[in-house]
Image 1 (cartoon, rainbow, N blue to C red):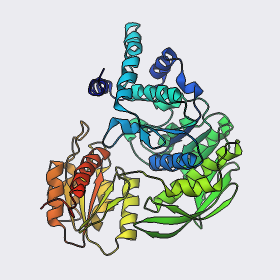
Image 2 (cartoon, rainbow, N blue to C red):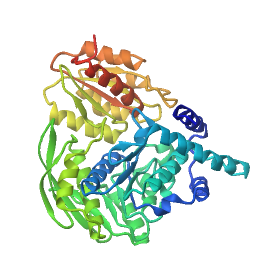
Image 3 (spheres, one colour):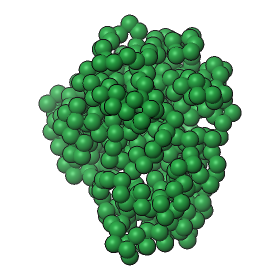
Image 4 (cartoon, rainbow, N blue to C red):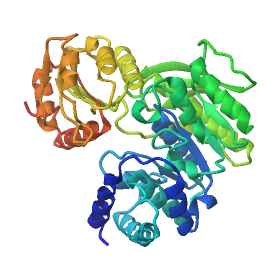
Length: 454
């Protein structure tokens, strides 16, 4: 099987859609010899920030000398981005071989009357097989959707569990309130396994603490100083962080951890919201150190400083500058708006905005568009893009300079034609759209131009 054939096979599995439950993947993994039982896992869930936290935790572990696998989704430009060891993506030929090895198990399941696993379940099983075969020291594993219903939740005994935060997203699958969604997210909390969370909402904390108490899972809370602290229903440990100087090169933070104090840690990722994610990654490292793994303070400093996580407040300098950020829900839009005010307080913002039909259009638009000088609404290349053009109607409630351009390349050209030299073009919304736009922008920047041709 060639790589292109493997991708085509995986693509046709999307016809099974979102079909939750762990029965199918457990059966598939059983037929594969349960490779996930032989992996040391750090399991990271939450609504926003889980990918950034994963990247920072993995970078710290790599700096400590470990061989670290990461499984993330979705990818930006290549399916191989989902499976990485110490910064190196899986090869295309390896993907092809792994998919070919899984097909007989999938066919056997169907022949014996089992439901066919979904595309994400197959990808998760592929990840477990790959990282087991490679003998990684740790697998940092990102939850796909929710928690209890997500296929990554077959991991029974992770070393540490993280729930970054909980906000309204994927409500058609997870629930209509943060408490309902928190119940799904809390499904990754395991018996006796330490939990790290940066959540501050009392309703969410109540759910997380209740589940942790039932599972005997000790809780570490990540808190900002001197922010307000909601009390929990039973004791917890604290990791406290404070932000410092920031620029487009990165930002400084100090963390009072479980074991040590870390002053002036450098983080190349931008935005105040990344401070809590960084402190969560420090908490993970310290909890692993308490379990006997060799992770010193030097690794924490070096790992955070080397973290790479694209399409999250990613800045391309020029006239105009370009910002790419996958703010696909209200909480993400709120963080993006704060970052624009912090880093570009006196700049005009030209948004290129493309959202899926199942997202909170009104709330995202209400957060971002009052900060805009103009907005170009475009269509993400996704089957879930229905209703994308309703965003324009919402935007016109705040701004008259609203343009609808369906094709992403044309939308970018329109945005650059509107931009003045000191303006900022901000590409945001669905990761599907952001990925396509990012690829176009990167190619153009390689031609040493300041922006797309007008």
